Image (cartoon, rainbow over all chains, first blue to last red; front, side):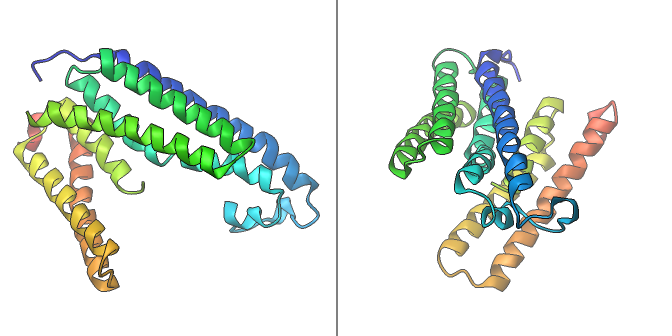
Length: 147
Length: 81
């Protein structure tokens, strides 16, 4: 490519990756003690289950952390792809870097809501807002690669 | 967000090492099949057709993935031609 790589957008990318790992820690920091406490779970001999199997046996709030950890591997996978793509075509700065920071910020707030109050309407508004930001990034990438 | 998450990094790697016209064609085939797959699953959704679409797209992705491995394992990506 004739244009130079613009890496500013990698900062929010790495920030969201770090946040995902924080959610990983949060998930197990609550899930493992809850499993140990549960009378229904024989952790040492547990075979062939998933989070769905655990959900029935653990307090709902414990599963919320895992729900969000899983969600961080859904729409954000599109965010990483479009961010790297924008950086490669030399458009990972300015407005796109700002949009990426807004996206990462909204996803962090979305996580905090989901693991605490978890009001679905609030979560939906945050998810919708972050999706609109993602659409803007994808739109910019589309202009960049098709023009 | 399942298989396409493999497609994105594969294509980015190929772009970085120099994608050939074959790679571009395979990527377009993959995207086209996934769009048809989406439309089919959202409307008619008869399983044999969905499975066939998924299998075809998987073959395209597998070839792309193999080409990524070749392009990254060997120093000279021109080997892909």
